[in-house]
Image 1 (cartoon, one colour):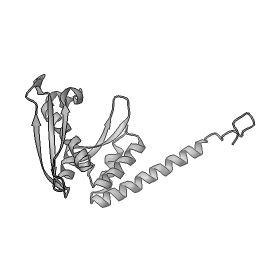
Image 2 (cartoon, rainbow, N blue to C red; image 1 turned 180 degrees about the horizontal axis):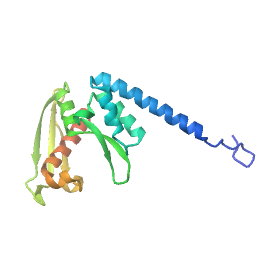
Image 3 (cartoon, rainbow, N blue to C red; image 1 turned 30 degrees about the vertical axis):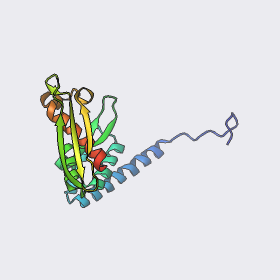
Length: 182
């Protein structure tokens, strides 16, 4: 291929190509909604309505949610999976603490967990919290330590329940590393 003035120009994207792509993508989402509802044995219309209420969420993130919920068998209507938007405007699918806990407890190798926390406080909250998960197929537990100053944010829940949120963060990160989920 030549790159110069005599190289053929790329054809401009026409509105019909864009509208065709949007139509195909919406059909794909509709198909995924149907599959997800069937697999999870939830009402398809309720799931579709829940998706329709996610007005600001980009279609590609909705598709990612539908595929992730099918992979892990998580129900957004039970708040086991959802979305979050970061300060930079990007959206991401998240598995909630309820979904994470359910997946952990259903995992065949799960053999218990323990939390530990620092004796030192930062603004009345333990400086750090650890979660250790025991697996049946391992000798040593997998341990993750999360520091309050690194994970806190301005969300209302962090203001109202900082200790619980720190514990949730430690649990979710430990489950991610120990079990490959969340």
